[in-house]
Image (cartoon, rainbow, N blue to C red; front, side, top):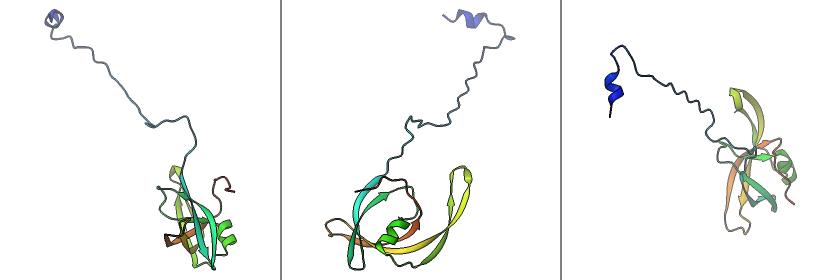
Length: 129
């Protein structure tokens, strides 16, 4: 059965096939969209409740509020904080943000908590009517 193996001389070496694999992106996808979880909540401020949409980004290390929402709700700033944002490609960008403490509650008001947030200029999210 192994007739060819036995016939080979000592000087002959078996052919080696070099297999080169290069996997750069294992989760390649045709879609360029990223879907984040959202929920509806209330911010309680100045004895008023403001209906808002909350984006849940499990990869974020901080919580943010849009500057538009902070102005509309008339939040009082607690001071400024300089944050060094790490961007794609190893680029770092320092930005100064206003810091706020908000009282966030679910829609029926049965659960609420205080949360420290920083303001952010812009979010890419459709407007909720």
